[in-house]
Length: 186
Image (cartoon, rainbow, N blue to C red; front, side):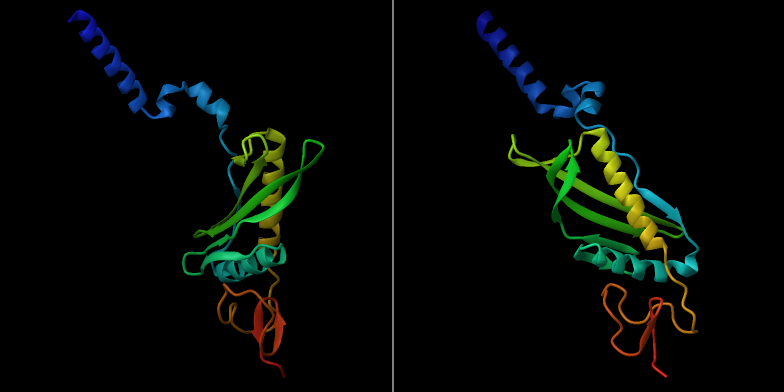
């Protein structure tokens, strides 16, 4: 009977250890070593009246950079792109990566997040970036995209800041485009 009880107690202890999430079994330093915290996204302040023009410009900038818009909500000020596979510089050569870009406009703050994953040939799966230099490259790309998004030309003629659907990038259907606002041809 005592052997049976000891086996039952050992089995219960193993099951209890397995029932805990893996994060609780690892120490805090081991969790941080595996997945270091990502630096914050690129951010820039703006004046609320410019929000519509900045949002429309974000859609244009993402389209010009080769990203297809996956979801776009002008009322929430949020744009997300589809995943794009590309070669990025890494470790003295290039690596296969896939990017998703998210742009969020808050009340007075714009934020750009580039989510990049690298193809891990040994695991045969996409993995988050863990190398510090590669993460710095993502941060630089976020900053460059944000700078292009915030560089909204001011319209020279009176008219609406935004005309039509800001989630649809493209040339003006009728008239002459000045800044981002279509203006009727004279």
